[in-house]
Length: 402
Image 1 (cartoon, rainbow, N blue to C red):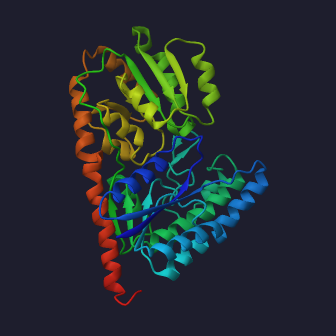
Image 2: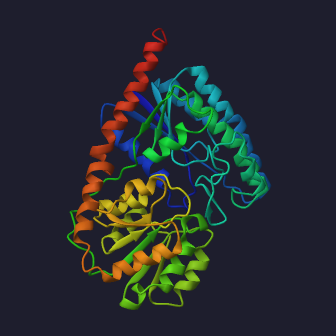
Image 3: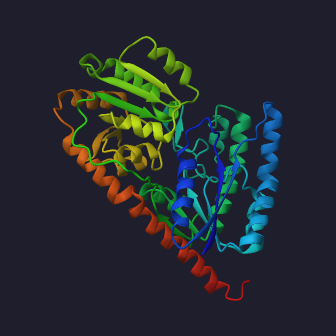
């Protein structure tokens, strides 16, 4: 079967889980009965001038010239039977949508975030959960509150793309959601999903690690992700400096980049209980996890199957996270520690860790969770089935299609 994976690739300065998952899917599917091509385009042009950059982005959204040129050339050569689309923005825009209609090749859309409901993609506004745009047709609340990167201009731009994403969703042969929570959000959004097939297939990661017995000797907690308000990094630091952990020789490790990177770096320079590692690769994150007791995902908004949690489970590292969104699905009392999405309860969890003598059981279950739910052997057969089913249904509906 001939298929093509399409992805608008995030900036190389961002350690993107979407970039990693798109590439992994290509590699693992290619090893099965698929012949897989991978076409990726940078999601923002390498242009320093703000207005010129967004003029070029607008052209991409409307006319999709580069995407249509590359994909049509590859399609003429390979005769693809299905497309698997990851990040749409901004290269796979309006004209590319009509191009897919024209060639009558089915596409499967992977929803990595909630931008079809929320401009920020995470149901978060000013450091608090927000769902005001979720069930509205136009999402104007997000525009008036500058929900996308604090800019009216960028929020307007994302508002238009929100509508375009909904267009892709309605016409997709199949949708892949990364969690049951994400599927529930999609299927309860008014006027969006009718008869399409919605599947739950989580992200996955390979691992060569062996099951770890315990991690308490390391006395370290790791935060790995984008350094911005929606990820809860400010709340995490507030709790850390109030907790008893740092007074008991524990250390907080922070890796990543983002708008708050300089803020975190300056704080790290003032204390020995906090170490800032900066932006590191996926492979380096795995190395750090090997000497980590817990990882923490204190996101304020609703995450959608974070790769950080899967990285942790694959290395037998239990995870601390809020009881919200998809994170609540991934973390249980057996493989981690959960808190209500507020500072007081995160502080409670930190104090609980001080009184624990071992994380042996949590480590064991974290690795077992990875094997059962987030390993290639668990996920790839499900993805294979969805792709085959989409192609089969298309052939049945268009038996004379060339």
